[in-house]
Length: 63
Image (cartoon, rainbow, N blue to C red):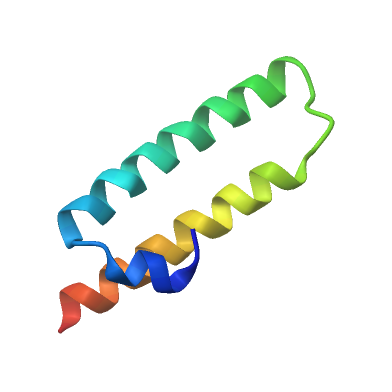
């Protein structure tokens, strides 16, 4: 999702998506340790998406 789309989400929905993305990243990392994935960039993209979500969530909570 793009930043603008994330900013339009409600806080509760953003928290749910953040939790799901973190779980997805953990599973992808575990799978990568067992059998290396050809496309390593997916792990990086997922980490960056989590960081974006956390930043927007912190911005919403500070207002």
